[in-house]
Image (cartoon, protein in one colour):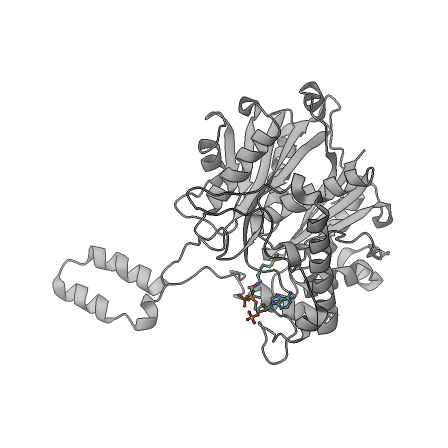
Length: 436
Ligand SMILES: CC(=O)SCCNC(=O)CCNC(=O)[C@H](O)C(C)(C)COP(=O)(O)OP(=O)(O)OC[C@H]1O[C@@H](n2cnc3c(N)ncnc32)[C@H](O)[C@@H]1OP(=O)(O)O
C-alpha cells in the first residue's frame, strides 16, 4: 500500500539533514589496503563531529551498516561509538540492506526523530573490499569441528584423509546472490540482454560518469563533503577518490573484454563499478533542535520507500519500483524533481532502469499504474557523475548520494532531488530530498 507520508514529528518538526561527510573512495587494495571498514567508519564519524563542532554528548543514536561483515565486530555501529569521542551510553546498532544500507540507516535515525525518541543522530555505512573475512569450505569447516571431537588417532586420520586439496583452499566472499549463486555482474548481463542495452550505450554512460566526476573534482566543490584521510597507523595520505579517470576516453572502453559473460557479454571492468573501500555518514536532527543549536540545515527528507522483487531475473531494478512509491508518498511527479541521483551499479543496470522509468508497458505490467514513471531528463541525471566513477563501497553509497544531492541542490539555490539505488536481494531504495 502506498499512501502519503507526512514526515513530521508530533510537534510539527521535519527531519533535517544538517551535514554529510565521506572518506575519499579508494579502489580495492590501494589507499585503504589493510584498513578495516570499522576504522573507515570511525574516521568519518570522528571527522563529521569535529568538522561541525558538535558536542559528542548531544548524539543520542548512531545507526551504521556494512555489507561485507567482519565476524569479529558484527555491530559496527557500537564499535564506532566506542572508538570515537562519543558518549559510551550512545545507542548504537547496525543494519544491513545490501547496497542500500545507508539509505536504511538514515531512515532508521529519521524514524527515531519522528517518533520523538531522539533529537540528534548519525547514520551511515562503511565497507572494505580489501579487508574481508576469508573463509574455508563447508566441508573443511565441518571436518575441523569433527576433528576437535574425535577421540582416537584413527578417527582423526580418517577425517584428514577425507579432505581433498580443493576443500582446504581459502574461500573469499562473493559479490553474489546467496539464493541463486548469480554474481551481480551476471545479473547486469541478464539486464543488458532483456532490455537490449548495447555495449556502446553502456560504455557511453560510463565515459559520461568518469568525465563528470573528473570535472566535479577539478571544480573543488567536493572538498566540503569529502574528508582527507590519513588512516592510522598507515603512513599514507589520500585527499580524493582514486577510482575515477582523469582523462576518460571513449575509445579505451571499446577495447575491454566482457568479464561476466566472456563470449556473448557486454559488461566490462569499465562499465561496472569497481570494488571500492570507503565510508560515509550523515548528521540528522529534529528541525527546531538544529536551529536551537545554531546549525544551518542542508535539507529535509520529503519521503522514502523501499521495494523488493524476485532475485532470479533482472533483480537490480530497485529504482524503477521504489521511485514511484516515494513519489506518491511525497505527492510529486518525476517532472517536479530538479535532480535525479541514481546509483550506477553497472551501466547496463542504470540504463535498464532509465528505460523502464519511461515505459508505459512496465508501469502497467509491473507497477499496476496507467502512466509511466516518466522520461528522465539527462540534464538532471547524475549531474556530477555516478558510482561508475566514484566507486561503490557498498554500505557507504546511500549516504554519498544523499549528501552529494543535498549539496548540489543547495548550490543551485534549492529544489527537490531523488536519490535511488538498487540492491542485492532484489531490493530498491528511493528517498526524495528537499532543499529550501
Ligand atoms: C546493487 C549493486 O550495487 S551490485 C554491484 C556490486 N558491485 C560489484 O559487483 C562489483 C563489480 N566489479 C567487479 O567485480 C570488478 O571491478 C571487475 C571484475 C568488473 C573488474 O575487476 P578488475 O579486473 O580488477 O578491474 P581493473 O580495475 O583491474 O580493470 C581491468 C582493466 O580494465 C581497464 N579499465 C577499467 N576501467 C576503465 C575505463 N574506465 N576506461 C578504460 N579502461 C578501463 C583497466 O585499466 C584494466 O586494464 P589493464 O588490465 O590493462 O590494467
